[in-house]
Image (cartoon, rainbow, N blue to C red; front, side, top):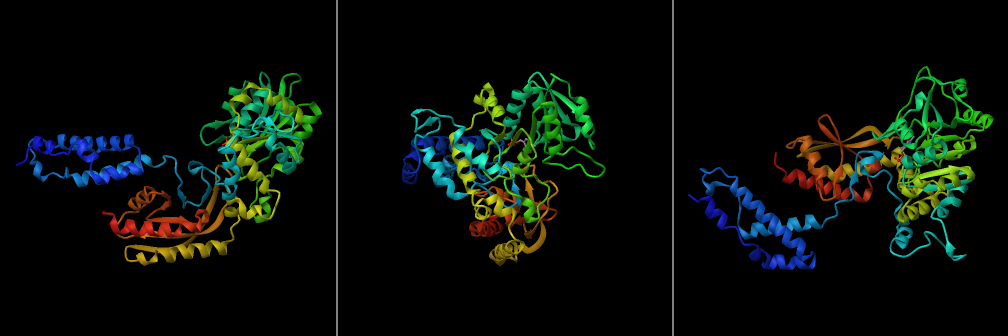
Length: 476
Ligand SMILES: *Cc1c(COP(=O)(O)O)cnc(C)c1O
């Protein structure tokens, strides 16, 4: 019978592991610090495992393996784990196109040159190379934004939540801001109109009811000298259906002009193209919002625009200039990498045809069902030699726009359905998301669904190989 002491003493010493040729070879891919930390961690783990064995247990039966070769294998795994980026790409097989947890809109790959050029060099971020004087970081995208939207002026901050707060603080601080009760939205649990309003120092004046708000509701709430703005919020992530009434943006704009009060439109999603042309209804374009007469409009860069995270503010020049002077602008200022990615993305919109295939979000949203079916069939065929371990078939279903956009929109799709025989659905789901490049899937009842709409066909081989590997190697 081995005692714990014997087992503890047989753990290799840190130096013996460090000097082993397999570990010395790791010096070419990793720093000494990472290697030594990995060795200490694995050895400590072995020691703890031995110490937790019950005192009277026969340690020769235990599964604590103190063999140096085994420890070295674990150390090498640990080194790779520490060297891997914590923020890493995943394969989105959920079919939710704007998945907030998975980083919302993926960017067009070809813009990486433009972004990298700015990332690894000095740039004209706040420098005007014509005059040799200080420039503004807001100038780089202002022209493009005004051309694409028809607005007078534009600026960009960190995200749309910051944009709303900045606008309310600039136009509404210490004053009333009138909003319909049907538009007091909560987006993603932390952005709530009443709370943003309180934070900005504006006084929220709610008018109308949840389902019906009339023109006269707004008009009666206006108090001369007290009302700072009228706010219309796009109900991005819900719809009020049935017996409803709201005041259209153009009518609200008329009211604002009559009383000389600015009208703010929090558009949320920020569609620069008309999705109705593709049978996707219910989203006002940014250009339509400008044409309706809103004075200040804000929207996200990474929702329906398909760009990087950003909050875009467009509208009357006098208001935009006032906002640039607000100290919050400094706190919300946009980063140069974001600006480079945003400018490069916006430039794609000048070619209205190409943009539909270049920006991944637009391509995924308008992917024809025949193409989806063909993709799904291909993935299904790649996986299907596993049929004795997992039942694989195609199924009709829907993808979602996500990201708090177009909540009712169903995008018909074709799904690859996996029903493992020896593993539980949960086990397969866990193994897929714990793969080196995580594969994030949908679980439905007793099967797993892969929606090819949000999967790049280049990843099919990796996915099918992972599935095969998991089915062969996982134990129930
Ligand atoms: C998404 C959204 C926001 C918040 O935008 P972020 O870019 O996520 O900060 C604000 N208002 C509306 C109406 C939205 O849809």
